[in-house]
Length: 258
View 1 (cartoon, rainbow, N blue to C red):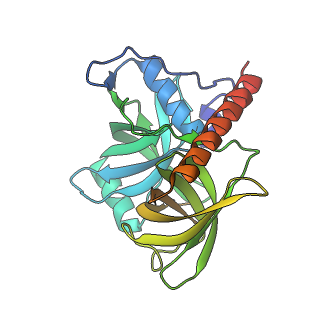
View 2 (cartoon, rainbow, N blue to C red; view 1 turned 30 degrees about the vertical axis):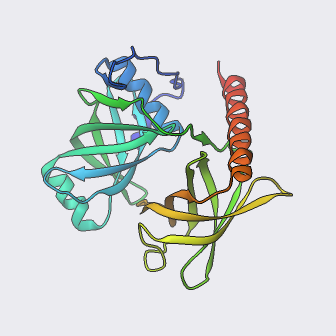
């Protein structure tokens, strides 16, 4: 089992790179790269993988990180044709978001493997990670003990239920059970969607679908959407909730820190 490569003692720590004038960090130290990769693992950050020479992106995620060996494991992509293309080229570019900040790097696959029938790639630490500090809105991740529901209405009035992954004043990221490639399309407007702010309260809003994807070992659809024409009162309410969730996440991290 590949999990024996790693220890349970390694815990992610906050990244504190030096500030860049253009708001973009080019992180090159193995220590900071390891911290960023482990933070992406902890936050279950999705990555869009572009195999060398391919302009189509495929969804993946980091599933293990070893700072001692300077390697990490990347979840296999699908369909099978894309997986084979990536294995043959051995090189890729990865783009994702960590706490709402665009993060990208290039990688080279050193070997492949399987666990429980699911493929993965073993990748050495990249030479650098590009970490963009510029973002329009602060985005708060959902605490593990604070699941908020979202109901997405499709064009044929079907209601799809899911859970929020994170939220900002600008929009949401959420997971939906099952795969809905026929019902959902990137760029479509979703009207009368409902988001639970608490057990007693919810908001109804329109969303523009900006991101749509699935993962190899998950029967879930991952979406990113921006709010459309929300009123000032709703915006203030979301701002209050985002701040509350961030404070709760910070307290949870402090309690679990050694």
